[in-house]
Image 1 (cartoon, helix red, strand yellow):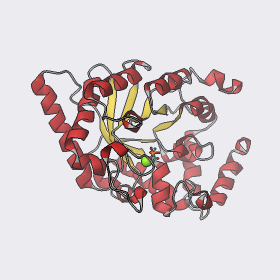
Image 2 (cartoon, rainbow, N blue to C red):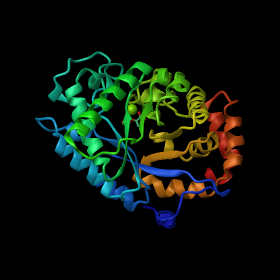
Image 3 (cartoon, protein in one colour):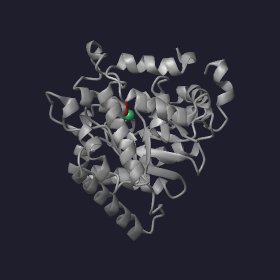
Image 4 (cartoon, rainbow, N blue to C red):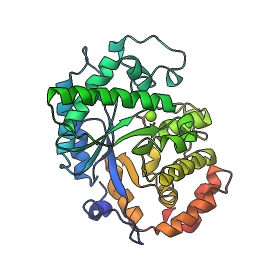
Length: 326
Ligand code: PEP
Ligand code: MG
C-alpha cells in the first residue's frame, strides 16, 4: 500500500460534498478477505467462490463451503456486507471435475448459472451453505451471468427450496437476506427495468459486460482498444442500469475492474453508483480519490461524457475537469 494512501485506510468513504459511497473488495478466499480488511475495505462486493471448487478431485461439501463463507465474513465483523457470488465455472475458469464437454466458444458457452440451473444438487449445496452463513453475518447472495428474467426466477426458486429445507431442519438463516444479480450480459442490462422490480440489487460486472457488448474477447491483447470500459456503448448501458435500479429504489454496485479505475470512478460516482468493489489493494487509493470529488459536479461530468463518441475523448474530458488526475 502506497504511503500516501495510508491515511485513507480507516476513514469513511465520502465525497467533498458529503455523499457516502461503499468501498468493498473483490476476494477469492477467506485469506483475501483478511488482507482486504487490513487495506480498508468495508466489506466484500464480490466473493468469487469458484476457487473453492478448483484444483481438487471432489466437490466442496456444504460444511466446507459454510466454513469458508463464515470465515470471510469474520474478517469484517457481523454488520459488514459480504456479497457471495454463486459459482461461475466455465468461460476462463475450468472445472475438470464436472466433465463438461469441450466448447468452441467457452465465453459464450455453458457456464455459471447455466450449469447451476441444470444441476440443482450442486447449486443447492452452495445456496444452503451461504444461507447458513447468513445466520450470524450480513451475507448477500448474487447470481452470475444472468441473461434473462427466466434465469433469475428459476435461480430464486431454487434458493426458496433451499430455505424451505433449512427451515424444515430447524437450521438458522436470515430469511430476508438480500438477493441480487450481476449485470454482465447485455441482455440483462437491456432488461434492467424489469429485473429491478424483482431483485434486491445489481452489481455490474464490467469485465464481461465490456467483452460481450463490444464482441471483443477480454483475454485478447489485440482487442484492448475495444475492451475499454470507457467505450460509449458500455457507459450508456451502465447509465441505463443505474437509472433502472434507482426507479425501483434498489442499490447498484460494480465489481468489474472498472470500479477501481481512476478515470472511471468520477463518471460512475456522477451516474449515482452506490457501491464500488475492487481488488483490496485499490481501496485506499479510491477512497482518497473520492474524497477529492464533488458528487453534483461529477453528475454534470457524467452527462457530458455520455454525449461523446470515443473513449479517448471521454478520457480527455475527465482530465480537463480534474486536471490533477493526469
Ligand atoms: C466481471 O465479469 O466483471 C466480474 C466481476 O466477474 P469475473 O471477472 O469473475 O468474470
Ligand atoms: Mg464475469
